[in-house]
Length: 460
Image (cartoon, rainbow, N blue to C red; front, side, top):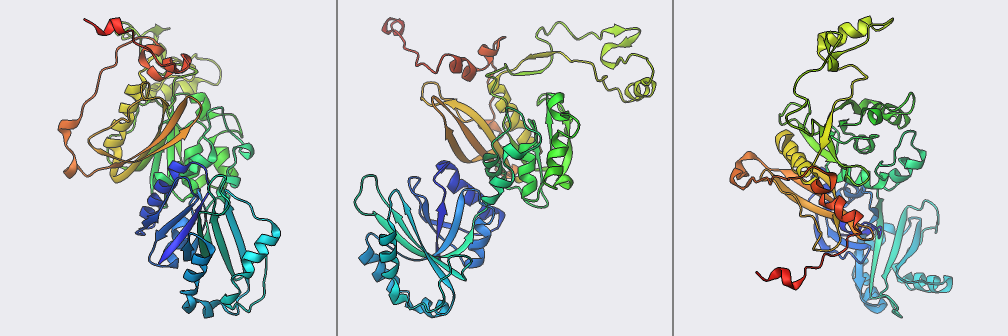
């Protein structure tokens, strides 16, 4: 049967990938019959109404899905096609009902609405008209081109189910107890979780967890998750204002497996194929250059520094109340709370490669990596989409700002049977400063100005 999905007209490049991901989650084959990024109306083919409900129930970018009765380029054609569906009419003859008109790109006054609704009197519905909670709701969809006198396309359908946009209100950052300046918008967090196929029985990992926006979105869809971050202060938060308090706020405490302090190049995670998904929004290195644990000078920092006969990274001052902590730290070999390990600059391109390498070594077959990355809007400064022989790129979604954009890249872990290791290549990035190691950061502060090459420099 044919159905029409009523999308929201935002994040247009995210809409189809989200529906395709949800079709995979629900194991529901979906065929796109008509899709246009410029239109909020999408026609798909599904087996039955049960599949239609399952497909959109958690879709963040879908308002609702309707059983499509007819389409047309004008109202005469629409009515002729609706009249061919007369076998469906008796089923709804005595039901309470309501008619809606959804005009995208155009307007109708009240008299026009009434005239259009009255033009469908031949349907013969005899039930009461209820504007609130009717048994059936029918809708006329109009798509108007810019400055057009009449709509360019029309559809008529019966409401089946609403999408999952209520979650946006529930997880609004303005109402959340613990956030930071880098917390991901809740709508985009939920979309990312959908693309990562978060679902009950799955475990997902965020290596740049921050205040826990992605794990909360995964928990909303029934998955369990955990995360890590280089900044322990963000990870710990404050009493009653931390990641745990966020999960408690939404009554999702059982879905949070915990967090730990680590960077991507120094992680305690065992390289085994355990995770169903990895999703992350890594730092772009704009406000502060990217860093990882290590020393700038490879010849320095290898010798342990001793203080009062103990290695500084294991040292805890022996004072009242610290003797038990000292014994525990010494037994476990962990550094004391006040120890600050050295850090060194880190290449943004190396960061992307390391994320893909982590995904390749820890995702199960078919597991997904959903990764955000920034790029300039012009071809000269555009960052290339990173690749890995073990990962297949599923979708590229783009959120555009002024002179730059950020992409949501989604990959699928391939079975080792289909991996060509000969394609695995990694370029060494040379440099010692934040700008040398991050071309996006350098171009950002240059205003993404196009570099002009003088003709003389092209002549040898």
